[in-house]
Image (cartoon, rainbow, N blue to C red; front, side, top):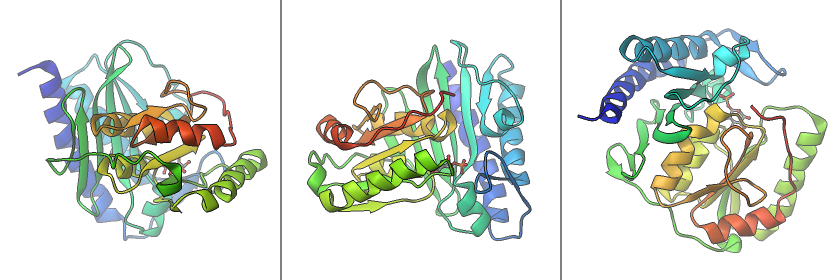
Length: 272
Ligand code: LIP
């Protein structure tokens, strides 16, 4: 068994365990705290799930590093080195989790030498386990998945988010993009979780997804899942994808990705 096999088996076990917490708590009353603004929420369960994952991985692989949403919000510096690093969003779609909307997930990726080796996105409410390993394809609950192959924007189902920032410049750009795109595409959808939006591209249920202002933990696992399902991840202006850039565009084909990149109004947040 390779090291990566061992990491993969360990993370799947931990993610399932973490999923039981999310499943048990989603319909219970919860106290919420706010982070960057009044709609950027965190609950004690986000923190507990992140701790479970970090403690579980550290106990087996003590030299592994972490970039976690909740540790970062408490002041831990984000640092991506060549060391094996797990990028973790313990609950992506926290707002959905708070309200009991069943589109919420655990998103976790392993990068070694800054290359993604493993990505897992688990929605324990709908029992959707998306997974991918470098060079081995993408899967939903163990069955292979594939992007739609759509190449034309006019026929595309687009995933985009309003986001949790209340910065007026950011909100203006989000609304401008929604306004411009609506008459040019088949439709616009938002699940409220960047990771799940990306998995919909991998699944072939939607064709293209983009967002500005997300963080590495929202997109690291989705990136490898989309690429292993035959899709592409790029910067929304058309260049190469950078997991730390807080910008993502993923699509079923490069043709479609580049067509959208040309018409998007761009927003450049501060890097992770
Ligand atoms: C959220 C996302 C959501 C996005 C927000 C935020 P959280 O993550 O996945 O799609 O629009 O900007 O990042 O806070 O629920 O982990």
